[in-house]
Image: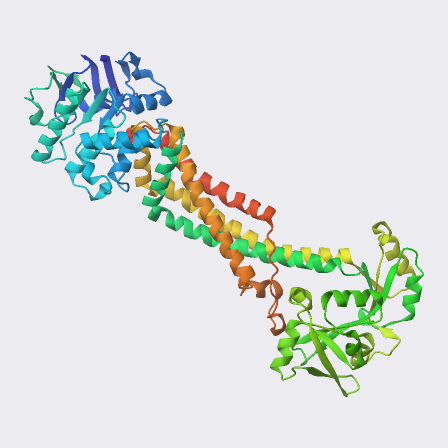
Length: 223
Length: 392
């Protein structure tokens, strides 16, 4: 499913302020696996996740997802890849605050070329899976942190992606909401989704349904 | 319908974010309203003038001595009539009667009521007029402005004109000239030629000007030259010159407004550009989020284009409808004074609805194109930056 080979990412490359966020990282994730990238802040987890999401490009190395070389994708193709193949849950949720939950969830499907009926049915299904249906018409800015997180999950699932990427998903949640989120992840794993979670939350360390934990430190894989 | 989710989303976005657009819309509506009002007023005036001038004679000849208008002898009619190509030669007495010195004045027009052309023109204007009764005693037709003015001074059915010999002449008001002629006729008094001669102290052999038609346009220049040779102190005005003078007058006033509008528009667009470039971080983040969930640069630009085209379209429509009501229903208070000047006799002038579609189209382009550029360029600049940076 995912092949990461010798990937490096250097910010401000060629300047005196050059910073190596990732150094020669390599690993594989099989289809349907759930992998946790564990490490402290600044270890390179989020950078790696944004490369997997096609939001950024590596300075060196290659990333192949489902046979597609996403590390070299032109912008338009990278957008299509995100629109069809990946669901992303961001640490700060990154929702459109002025819109309702339902409207936020439908955003990835607007250009999917489907009918309004299909769109509405997919949005309902996704909100149900993320347990946020009861807040469908409420504006996002009025939601609690946990509800915003569930809205972000519903949005990440609405286009039925094979790969789900979560960047510090529980960093802004209390323990109860974090456990609820982990429950949702287990459900998604049961649905056969490939999941990569970048976190420093100890709650993820001993989860029975996590297939692999990849430790990261200073831009390198340590275990 | 393939694109219906897009429009559904667009409408919901516009509705939910209405507060964000309200400022730009209010300023846009105000600017469109102001310029459309100016366009409506100047076009309605030009249109009405042109319509009225169509019925006017091709040539008007008067006499000027040492730069001062002087009466001209009726004999000139015979001499002018002998020119080849000239038709319908009609004498006229035309002048201002001042109600008070330097104060309100009427435009008195005395015409030959037995002339076939004049009878036809008057009966077209006033369908039910009884010419026999009109000619039986000193009578006149008055414009609406004159009628209201005289009524305020307690002259409801007649007026006493003071003549150069110091005597008064009582003239009955027979009828009021139709409302649609108000632009030219609001302060006009129309009476028989002989009565006007008496009021202005002209002899029966003198008139203020002579009008005539020359059906062949190609002959106009020749006729003008011939008149100059025949009479050394003649002043000739053609219908074309009057038309051009009016067009220039209203274009000049409209042009001043246009220049002011362009300055205001430029300022507004700069503010919009600044707002979308620097201040609006929410907008920037929104674009970043849309890009992160799979929208392409084109998708973002399409959304922004439709979003702002809706704002532009609605603002334009509201501005134009408000301007229409202001000019054609309320008769453009304030603006009317700028175009027509102020004066009690001009109060009853109303504008005949006339929509200059070509000018409105140009106005739309002058407003829509800079607006869209001012909004789309910053949106494009954000859309092409990596989504991660835009979301920060």
